[in-house]
Amino acid sequence: MTQGTSLRERLGFVGWDTHGDGRSVAPGAIVKPRERLSWGRSIGLGGQHVLAMFGSTVLVPILTGFPVSTTLLFSAIGTVLFLLITGNRLPSYLGSSFAFIVPIGVATASSGVGAALFGILVTGLLLVVAGVAVHVAGPRWLQAFMPPVVTGTIVALIGFNLAPVAWGLGPDSGFRAAPVTAAVTLGAILLVTVLLRGILGRLSILLGIVIGYLVALVRGEVDLSKVEEAAWFGLPQFHAPAVDLGVLLIFLPVVLVLIAENIGHVKSVATMTGEDYDPLMGRALIADGVATTLAGAGGGSGTTTYAENIGVMAASRVYSTAAYWFAAGVAFLLALSPKFGELVASIPVGVVGGTATLLFGMIGMLGARIWVQNKVDFGDPVNLMSAGVGLVIAIAGFTFTTDGGLEFGAIAIATVATLVLYHGMRFVARRRGTSQEEAATPAAVPAPPATDVPDVR
Image (tube, rainbow, N blue to C red; front, side, top):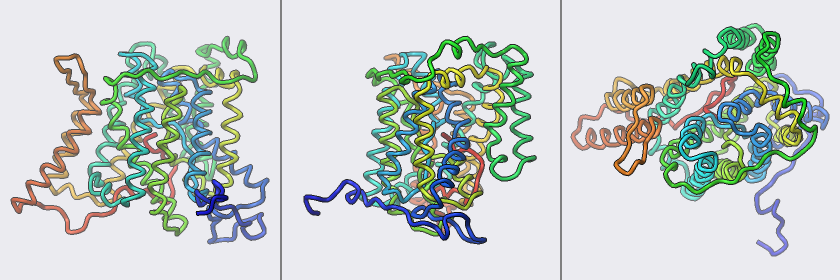
């Protein structure tokens, strides 16, 4: 490599060729990641991606108490970093990960926001390490460590563990705080999903939140005082992490979830475009890890790849990374408006509770979808028992506290239990000749070619 080699060349960065006439996509054709339509159409598609990610991305800071504008800023920066690190060859938007909700809540309650941010930061660093290992050694070892039965269980147990949050941990939170508004919001999302076609149907979460917000406004449940006081332009709030090693164990399972989501994203885009993206799998993990690390360092929520945006690509048949650059730009500009941030923060608890009821249930069922897609055999007692124990631990909310006061939450215990039980039972069964596993194990976590269901965030 010569001394004058640019950063673009070092990253293997590619530009775009104009697809056809730049105006339309022929029947049966797709616009590949290295292609683009006209700049005007690319900007429009970028706007669609912003709408697609918006409802879920801002729901995480609303649930965790993090500043919305700060989360949007690091979401935009993370998306740009993802495009750069993957050489502009893998389309993706990095939005807020729902897998962080419980760890953030536990860490904030016990040790403060700084400790929660430290957990996010370390999670990002561990994801970078995993990405480097995958980039150097390939993804096979990772798929062996996290087969579909384990990955599906971890995804499912996080969703079902969040169920009490959806109902409300107190009388002033969740669904029960404003049941009428929550029910209207939930019903609106469900109806939009089945009534509307195309991109509008894929924006069901966002449209449902808007409808629920309007109902809450009429019912007097919305406080707009902070919106009126906020400036139109300004920097988001930043918050530094505080080192607290005691919170790390509750964040470790999130690393596994982020790995699963990124692998699923890479495989999904590869399926839809006909490209081989396995060589980019390590880079994708590194990119998400860097984005999550930066978010933790500055006060934002951890990030992950977004399935809603895959749905937009599938609907439009445009997989161009050009649209994601514009999406990141729009998110960045929105983050620089405190008034916009306060408007989002004014979404009342009823709307949040109704939306969370759907999203958390969908997260749980996404784990089941991983099992179905990979044809996991639950006639095999190793699969059945390891998954069953993990799910019960998470749903029941098992906790364990050491003599030194270190507390292990349900998600951490369930994740460790699933991994230990699966690999331990599988090892013994193979040695004793009692294994009922199938001769061939499917590749881990291939996502479907088109979906409007959110990933685990």
